[in-house]
Length: 144
Image (tube, rainbow, N blue to C red; front, side):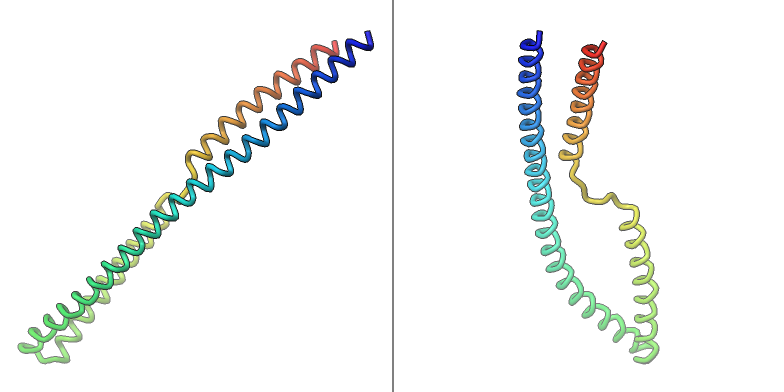
């Protein structure tokens, strides 16, 4: 009787070692998946940011030249001081409005995440929970 119990314990020990190794590989795979997702997201964000910066610089230069021309034409009718005051006031109002809207958008926007990694981890958590229930049920049955 003791021999069967010893063989059973060795079998359980081997299975637990296999399970431990599998969980270790699983965790390592999830870490690699997360790294891959983060690299891809960072690469895309960097490229988009670079293009946006280049476009913004050109647009800003063109906008400044256009506003100087508008102020000059208004200045022909009202004087240069009033023209600069009108154009500057317009920019203050529009600038604060856009900045406020952009801040609101940033606050409400989804944060970058790792959707595939999160999904895989949830599935693994559920799977390990099921294994735990099976093991606890097996131990409870043996104790009876």
